[in-house]
Amino acid sequence: MAVRRLPPRCILFARSQRAGVGLPRSCNPCRSNPCRSNPLTFAVAFDITTVHWCLVTKKDLVVTIATDARLTRAQAARALDAVVKGIQASLVRGDRVIISGFGTFGVSKRKARRVRNPRDGCAMEIAAKRVPRFAPGLELKSAIERCTIRGST
Image (cartoon, rainbow, N blue to C red; front, side, top):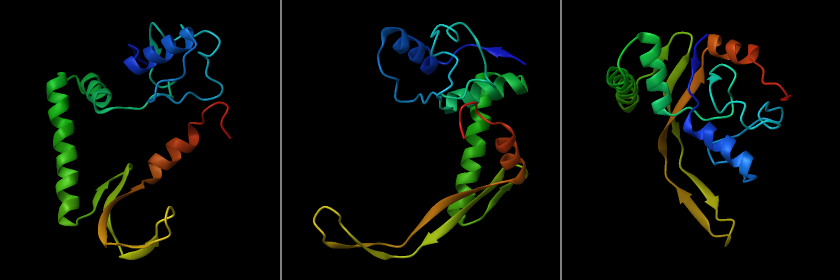
């Protein structure tokens, strides 16, 4: 299990806890956070499988891909961009993208509908549109079910 450096958001979290300030926008600590009593716990290094309160950004994914596949960050960024562009191009054409074990990306059609503005009560028409959808695969669902966060019900 590799130990990686702390992402900047978590460092901000540790600093804000020391200073008695609220949490940064991107952090969502759980109730049983081991850092609550000692905010310096994760300030040096952390195990990526146990830190669960920070959002994962594209940069984080690039670093993980580069580390796991032994690529440079530039190569990993190009690979991630190619995958995202490929999925996007398929969805624009109306195709479904199935990644075995992960999930299915697809496009759904929403009908036009009439809604009411809650502020002034006026009726409005919302046009029909196509929206992207994601359905998680069986392996992803079971992995999430097995990995429970302490303190959550």
